[in-house]
Image (cartoon, rainbow, N blue to C red):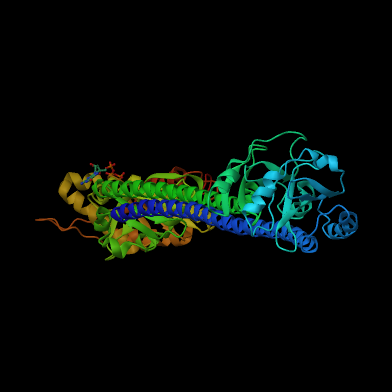
Length: 627
Ligand SMILES: Nc1nc2c(ncn2[C@@H]2O[C@H](COP(=O)(O)OP(=O)(O)OP(=O)(O)O)[C@@H](O)[C@H]2O)c(=O)[nH]1
């Protein structure tokens, strides 16, 4: 039992650590899963953002290059129609130019130069605005590149227009000689319309640069008007490299926001555009869902932790219970050993069913039964007298413990023995038991009974002596009174017994006394009580007997005694007579002595009247009858 408890405890401890290991693994799995989820979602979000930023910059490139292409076409159209720059032609031609320029709403200025770089005509502007502009270098560049159709320049030539893109186209005479150039000015500020229509979020930036990295345009607009920003380093790097596009994570020196930025050259121009999407915004959706994942994971981890803690506590309680059970088992074992070693017989019975739950070896030997056979039996199976069971049950109703109650008990084989029984009722709520301790006192009890019997027995006649007679008489009187039944008493005294002794000796006298006892026994009923009160005096108690019947019985005794013959060697057999006083129990008698006193008076009267007769007691002034 104890070993089983130990094994269970060890198993519980193992289970406890197993659950903790599972919980830790689960938590680690959740954390790993969450980390993977974060990483994966971030990669996917950045991938999506890369695609988005590339798409946006491509769209923007197409828009800008489309616009430049449109301008180129207008310039080509003008070049196709312009082969002569003579001053008389120009006014007529100007109307045509205006029409062409109207088809290019983003254009701010249009001018035509001759091959010396001199301004021939200008639209939307007066000539003085172009006066300070040295276009000779542009023209030489155009000459150098025979097939070049256009070129761009983003110099801030006209302060009122801001940074602008200058597009130039060679003009040829009909023989194909270069006679000058036509130039259209696209203010960068007008290109902003193209930039602003892109969906770049609240923190996104679209900007336009020249190859030196100069900021030409930006949306949202620059932090403060007039603030000149240093050239964009990444733009310059792209300009000096062979590649046409580049994608980078760039932290802005303007607002400190990190952006995924796509830089892209605008083909056939000196423009580089940049589209940047804020990484914060890219990851915002991710962060929102990650918050949900993280909160759910933390909740799961907390739940798991709480469950582990609760499980741990429950296991602790179970272990504590097992520990208590172990202690209980040890205590039970101690009790069992003590019960076996104790020099007394022990029985434990359930209460109130009174079925035997435990019996020690000593008690089993006492009842001559083995412990298994005794267990489950009703304790009253071992009782002899029902009144003992009643007394014990009554005592237990009034007190918790019964000490040294003497009673007779029965063995399994039916033989009887005396035991000193102590009983204690269990006190605990769950201990509804009787603890019974038995000591075998048969030997002492039998000795006691023997001594008791001796104490009330006359050794010569084997009748009860005065003490025994009085004791029995007291009981009979009480019974007679209780049931209102008549009862008589007679006192008998051998006549002249002294002479018997004197003449025949004491031994013969003793024989006479014994014969007298036998004579009485022969005459009276079994239920009558005969006693030798002392010397040659006897008494007979006659329950259920009225005075008339008592007188008859006394007379029969008297005759029986008179007929006795005691053989005496060498002589005639001895015979003797007896005088008898009889009285009836009545209500005036307080004690047995009162009854005996009346019988004694009648006996005295019998003696006085000449002996060998029966006299009934009569109260004073009534005469006693005699024979
Ligand atoms: N043998 C014998 N004699 C006993 C015993 N007890 C008493 N006696 C004798 O009984 C005699 C009783 O004598 P008393 O009291 O004088 O009476 P009694 O001689 O019978 O004369 P009454 O009673 O007057 O007829 C005494 O001598 C006692 O010694 C006994 O146990 N054995």
